[in-house]
Image 1: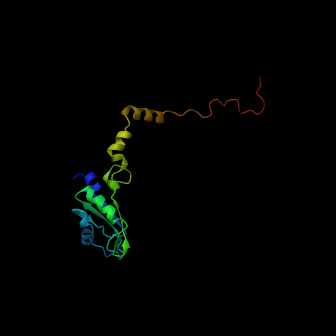
Image 2: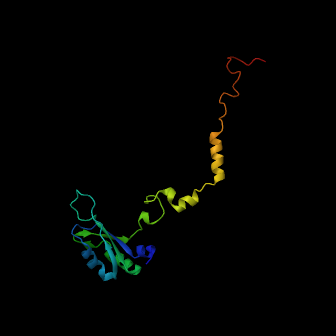
Image 3: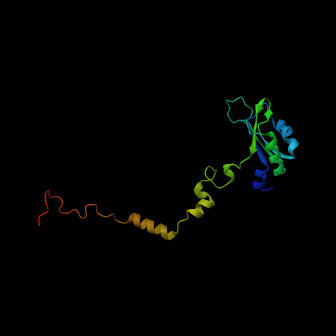
Length: 150
């Protein structure tokens, strides 16, 4: 399955109670189709007592099953909380865009758009190294006050 197809068959589940586990999510979403994977990100904050971050991704084998799950489970109640179920969005790091883990100038799209020819580089270097024009040029004779003598 390609990444694009996988994201179309994946749903985001938000607003989860701390008691929710991967098994709970599999059981809750199994009626809508075969589940390929359930991802419940762990809480990385060492000071938190929450076992997970409050959201999950449920990947189905078929994109139609994901749509069915969204239609039936969005705004449903799970462990006393109303959950939000929607189509998952691909993470920023999956594409070439700002916010990824690769520097923008190392991404091929950026390089193609901002490529500079060697000729342009040389012209820029020459312009920067050229002697600047004297800022006082053309101001001779202005050191005397009063009207101009004819």
